[in-house]
Amino acid sequence: MEEEAAAGETVLVVDDDVSTRASLLAVLGGAGIPAVGAASADDPVVLNTAAADDLRRLPGIGPKRADAILALRARLGRFHAIEDLLKVKGIGRATLKRLRPLVRLDGPASPTPDAGTSPSRG
Image (cartoon, rainbow, N blue to C red; front, top):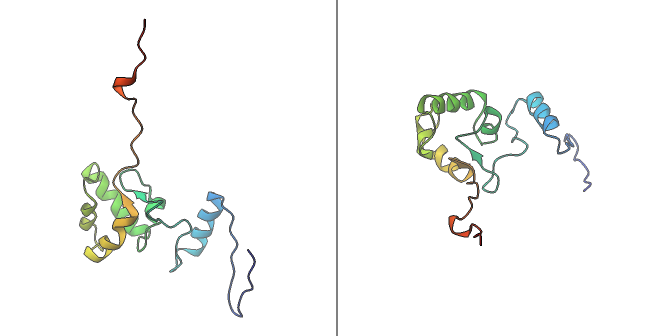
């Protein structure tokens, strides 16, 4: 897709390489620019396994708040409810409401073999 930039606009073209996106984010410093690969309902952040970079995909979560979330998770051992985020300074009910559709406590469960389907011998 090709579009012309309006006068005064800057156009950045970034490939899908994760290291390129991470480098771009580091250069931009998140200065009000949405993170590439921002969290969505289809691609949520998993709170109990997320690293700081994963947490920064969430709106309003910068380096300091991401570190505070990780510190809280370390203190709790794991998050037991999404509402645990309310214990982080700067995350109130309005922020939690905005984050709720973008986060999960744990990732998808691994499929387990059905105990009743093991092959019989004989």
